[in-house]
Image 1 (tube, rainbow, N blue to C red):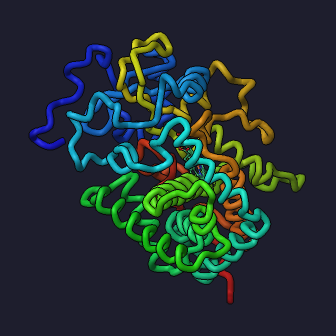
Image 2 (spheres, rainbow, N blue to C red):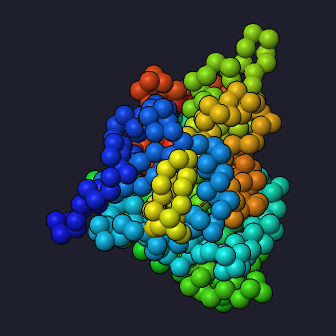
Length: 416
Ligand code: HEM
């Protein structure tokens, strides 16, 4: 908060007892906090975002389904937030909460137009080709560290692979430096560390994507960017840049954490180790279990109340911010044990729900990327083990994402 910014919470009696969605305990064991919030406040809890800004966290599975399917009550345009006067321009959550003219913040017919262009462009991605491209990217990344017998998989693999896959889908040349800069800037714009400037990082992401759109206007190819440019909906370059940032950010961060959380599960849970009878639970089961128990996008900010209403027994005022507690809703005791994680059960809310859910066919493409990443790694380095005790793994401080800061592993060096 800047010195001139008035404090946010004091005026709001409904937020008495509100809990910050930050801090070490939250970061390492958010599920404990969600449980405590649920038992104290029920399915909708008062919480504090960075800088003690009040918001509501929706923890209930049914309530989250209600919020995401009632756009007329809970909508996406964050300009209706009743807290903007308390929020400084350099607020850390600004890049993905502050209004941008992108698909993320549009509503109604305009949203259907923009999301339709993305869906059409993604629908034409050939899933077999994508799997082949991902296997090649995985090979190249693994080759870079295979000879050493050790690696830090978050930076060397889990973040790099979906970014390269997304960049390739969008028709950007896979230049190592540019891709790494994009990974860094996207991470900073979501979850800045001390000394990072998230707003500047977001601007750099935009500049890189704008360059791509200009190049594809001149020389279209068989890629997502060109298909968005050529779509009969006739999006402007500015709209395409905004929506491509949303596509790439939405593809990279959650898919990277899906890969990481699945690898962590496979490396730490004996149900996934080969047992005496040679059987083990599959990679597909691990991927699905992660979506239930350690989902990559643990919270999504959010929706803003269109008018005064009620939710989960709470009085919500027009303009209040509602955070989608996707991880909390997946573990709602109201749906367990039926909502349990078996390989086939995809009734989790990890891709959200309703008009703004992760658009078809993005979840299928993400599955191809994550599955290929995990299977290729296990295939190439079959004796992969954690290089630290499981309890020493630490989670990245983030309200949005559930993912590790580092995943150090060791294995028999591969002679090349
Ligand atoms: C190829 C990979 C992916 C692509 C291209 C992609 C694309 C997108 C796009 C464009 C949106 C914005 C939708 C809108 O506002 O209308 C979105 C939203 C979202 N995506 Fe994805 N995504 C990918 C992977 C994932 C993964 C792996 C997860 C988590 C497991 C995920 C979870 C979400 C969530 C929670 C939202 C927010 C929905 C809401 O506002 O209700 N996505 N995604």
